[in-house]
Length: 317
Image (cartoon, rainbow, N blue to C red; front, top):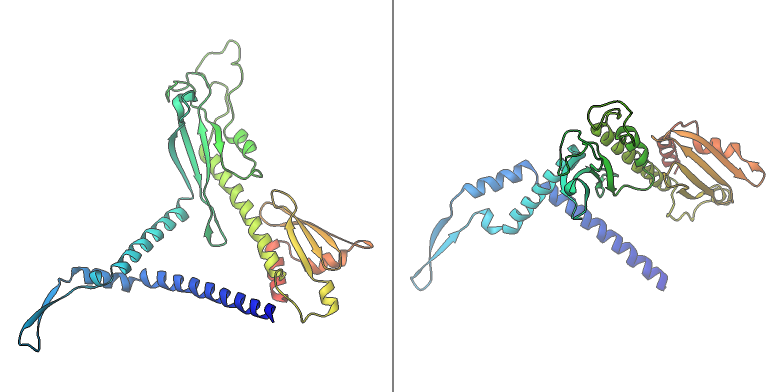
C-alpha cells in the first residue's frame, strides 16, 4: 500500500514538472511572438486617458485608464528578459569561437601579464554547455615584433585551460602553435623568430573546437544508445528469453568515449569501438563459449555508424 502511494506521488511530481516545463516553453513562445511584441509597441505609444464617472451622491470621480505597459509591468519585464535571452543564445550559436584580452594578476607574469583568451561554445542535446576557455601568453624572449610589455617574441603558448583531459591540446598546440627552437642556428642573423614554424591561431582554434564538439557528440551518442535500449524503464511484460537478451548497461570505457562497454542480462559483455565522428570501427561480443558473432550482427544490423544503431534500437523498442 505504501509503495503504491509513493509511486502515485512520484507520478504526480513528474507530471507537475512536465507541465511546468511546457508552461515555460509556451510562455516564452507567446512573449516572443511578433504579434505580442507589436501589441506592446502599440500600447506604449497610446497615451493614458481620464474618465469622469458619476456617483450616487451626485458627485463625480476621476478614473485614469492606463495602457498595457502599466497594467502588466511584470509581463513587459518578462518580455525584455526573454528578448535578451534570445539575443544571447543567437550570439552563442553564431559566435562559437571568440577571443578576448585579459591580464594575469601575478606580478611576476611574463609579457607584463598580458593574456589572450579563447572562448569555445558547444551545444549538446539542444542545450548550451558551460564554455571552455584556453588562455595564451607570450613567454618566449626575442625581438620578434616588440609587442607586449616585455618587447619579446610574438609567439604564443598555452598558459591555462579548462578543457576535458581527453582533448589532445598538447598535440594541437605542437602542430599549430610550435615553440621556437632552444638555440638559433650558428652564423645566422635575423629576428628572434628565425627558423620557427609559422603559428596559425585560427587553425588551432578551429581544430580545438572540432575536437571538443566530437567529444560531446560521442557522449550524446552514448546517452541516445542507453535511451534506445530502454535502460531505466520497467519491462514487466517481457518473456524470459527477451529478458535474457536485454541490454542492461552501455557506458564509456575510456575518457575519450570512443570505447563503449556493453552488458547483456545473460552475462554477455561487448566492446564497441567508434571513430572520432561516430563511425563504427569494431564490435566484439564475448559469451560463455567465447566470441559471440551472432549477437554482434544482431546488435549492429549492418550499421556503419553508431547513430544508425540508435535508430534501429529505437524502432525495435
